[in-house]
Amino acid sequence: MNPQRLKIRLGALACAIICSMASCSYVSPPKEEASALHQSTTIEDANALLKRSKQLTKNNEVAAVYQLRAAEIAWNLLDTDGGRVKNISNLNESQKQAIQVLKTAAEELAENFVDSKYQPVKEFNHAGFSYQINAAAASQTGVHTLDNLTAIKPVSEVRHRLCNQWHTTDGIGAPLASKWKRPTDPKVARFVSSRSYMNSFTAVLSFDKTKKSGAPKSASLVGYDPSYISKIQLGQTEYPLAADFTSTMVDQTSDIHEFRLALKGLIHPGEIDAKLISLEHYDPNRIPVLFVHGLNSHPLMWRNVINNLRADPKLRGRYQFMIFYYPTAWPISYSSLRLRQELAAWEATVGTPKKMVLVGHSMGACFPECRPSIQSEKSGTKLLEKAVT
Image (cartoon, rainbow, N blue to C red; front, side, top):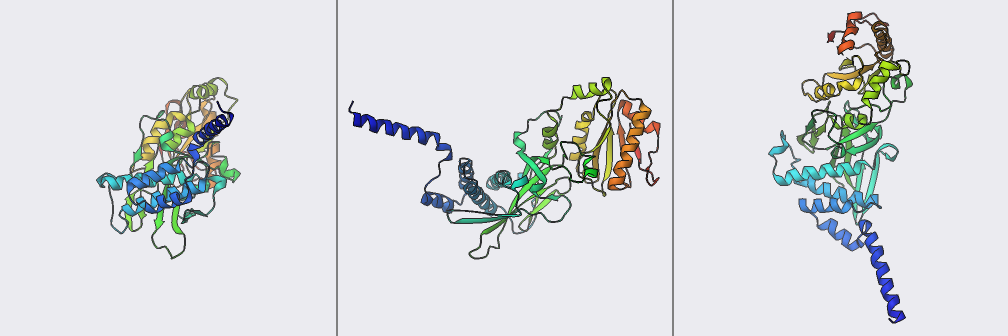
């Protein structure tokens, strides 16, 4: 074969291999990009833009513009001019897809604001499109910024296991399996496990229609705790908030070897001390429910109970959940003493709750019998209103 022709063929082959390897991150020419973004108006276009954004793994800003443009199209297909949507299932198919596009866009965009990436306001620009996202949360109970989290995961990536039921609610927003930052105050952190809190978290992306000429399009990306907030406003229209009450707890505890933990407390009681643990950010307006496990057991035995109670719409706005671990080889009287000491230290940190419920199983049910009315070591006021055995 002619050496010159062979050289040309080898060059072409090398180019083909390089193009094949780079196809997942290929970026179209600017004119093609601008045309795709400007001409997209349908829900099918929005889904195509989201699909395209997943290929732009090496350019977060361009990917973000694709996600925001897709979400903007979806937003325009939804009713935001007033009224109330009680049930997502009553919407037409195009609107249901629009809600899914908003959810996917929120999942993807949230990664740009978690932990050290967080900035109250970020701007994304590409192909003549400019979006400004406000990620600062209002000072309101149940509303959080993404910088309160160290990591997030779409709930679809959490394996359905460990809990008998998976509690979800259809609505607006992207429920995320979240890892919360631990408190910086050591007095508060004492009552939070190394895995931190297990509050549910839903990220909601919304747009401001009142765009000034020449200014970037304005959007907000804020997190909500669905145990506090069940409805949100898109524009002037009220929608149910999407929620997943199970994923975060399962995701954070799935690697714990429960049999070993229980056996260690029975055979090697000196290795782990007793500990009172708050599963949620403390709220003085909610009644604490404290769960105490039984013989040769551990606090995770309450997983299904807590999962079901947190999802109950009649209960979740009124109660917050805590657990108490103790080595079960200890005498009951000593375990009860350690519980009272932990409660006293916790009360000194957060204040004395007006009411409290203690739920015990097996040996744990003997705790209130050791001291039927657990009282505040600090103030002498009655802490334990009810013991459930």
